[in-house]
Length: 509
Image 1: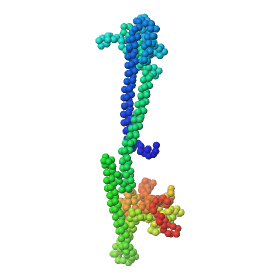
Image 2 (image 1 turned 90 degrees about the horizontal axis):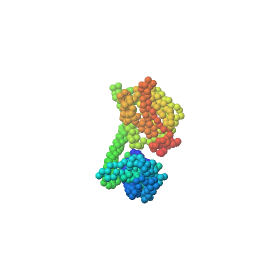
Image 3 (image 1 turned 135 degrees about the horizontal axis):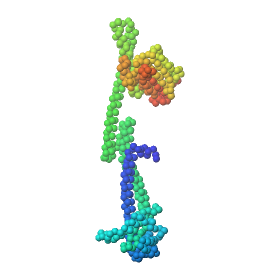
Image 4 (image 1 turned 180 degrees about the horizontal axis):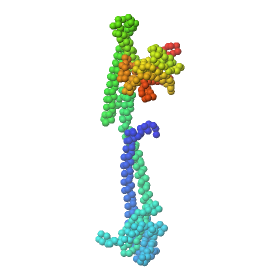
């Protein structure tokens, strides 16, 4: 059986349930009809055979056994029994008489086939019982019969007695032919039942296919809709409930497509606005930065009343410049225009350069072996390291430990501080944009985008960043740990990248 059929007939499928229900209904109906038919035919066959044999036996008893003398000889009984058994009814006869009072004699048509031992005792007692003659019962003796088995073969045994002291007679007829006929009938009914069940299964398959084909199309359309193919529509046929369901689906898909289009347009407009705003801010920020640099150089010679204001302007200008750069970077990530410029990077040298450029050498403890090289974008790796180490210094405090190792094809860089750690309710949100945790840490003067940008730069490399708390031996929180994982194999990066050639030229992949 193919996988497709197995998938269509899985235990939870509607198709299988329909087939099983049809099969059970057909099986129940066929078994009931076959059982009734078998029972009726069995009774008819047995009754016809039984009545024919007993009526013939009664007539023979009246015509032949009744003519025997009151004290017949054994030869008389045997000859009469043979004459009675020679008819077309096909039974054996046993006659029981008395040659003298209390001295019974037996005459059988075939002593090897039928003897007095084959007559059930209950039947003999019923035959020998004389009943009072009344208006309702004109005869003292009646004909009785019983079905029995001998050697696995069914037999009909009947008996009666001649009125006025005549002999008692018993007939013994095999019902093997009737049983064979009934067995043939049972086989025929069984085959008919099996064919009925098989036919019902085929009809169930046809019915299920007819009913479930629209449902399958609807499910396939729903999957396509979930994959982003919002223009998926179904052709409406008929006027039944499935057609109403199809129309409802088409309406929902059309409404969803319109809403997604509106949301995409608004999102694109928002991204364009942020990009344009950030771009427009760069021109005045460049001028402000130049002015603040001059003011910063002349800050020592300024009037002490003006110096704090100048310091505030310089600080906020730097902060605004960082915020605009971060916003532009976030906009590039959202628009999907961020690109990698890969180069073979010595990790220890890169981390040392990042720390040295920001004058963090005295506050950071580096544990990294020389010679660990990976294909990375140096600028983006610097952004990640600067955000993680700067965040640890700002919120956790020194000493900050940066350790580097490789495991299972990954570069693992862990940045650990020894501060108060990160509250459990804050951990799921540390990489969210503009999220600032101030419950247990001082208020940050950052933009709230640093860790988010670090995560985006890790993702574009095919890596990730996780945040957790370090627990000491006494069970208390002993700082926070940020773990950066990046692939050592650049072939796993699925985004479009730029690679640096050995001559320093930039080529687009």
